[in-house]
Amino acid sequence: MGAVTYPDPAVERLIQEHFIPVQFNVAEQPQAMEQFNTPWTPTLIVQDADGREHRRTQGYLDPQRFRAEMSLAWLQSAINRQDFAAAQQRTGEALEATEGDPTREPEATYWAAVASYKSSGDVQNLLQGWNRLLDTFPQSEWAKRVEFIRA
Amino acid sequence: MAGTNIQWRHSLEEARNEAREQGKLLLIDLFNPG
Image (cartoon, rainbow over all chains, first blue to last red; front, side):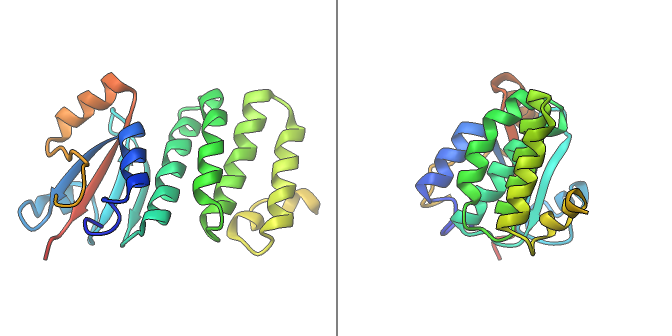
């Protein structure tokens, strides 16, 4: 991560814009593994200022996947606190950062539809987004979660 | 860390205070240089 991902200019910009980065070297601070309940490195955890966890990932991420993960964390944190207006504003960034990622683009599409619905109150926004998910990524885990709308 | 301009913090409490003041999230990276 330190050699490839963090020096990437787009990664630096993303961190600068949305995150306060904190790093623990577990060789020097092995207690951090227990503190954050992880058996493995690298582990990335996104929390808010009150310590609520919004996303966690383990294993190396290249710059593209890192940006996708962090843009989803940024979106997810707004959804988790039910600030759907903020979530709606964050969907564009998440969809852009996850584009072409077979795992994360469907996830961003799912939550973008939720944010659109909850911020507008119009259930058609949910159904349009989820139908797009079913049409575009029919084999994805996230499409499986919305198949019921066509049952 | 060489090669990056990211200013890593090493105190969770100070980082939480910064995050609260700036409306940001914490990105916590646990790594093993070995």
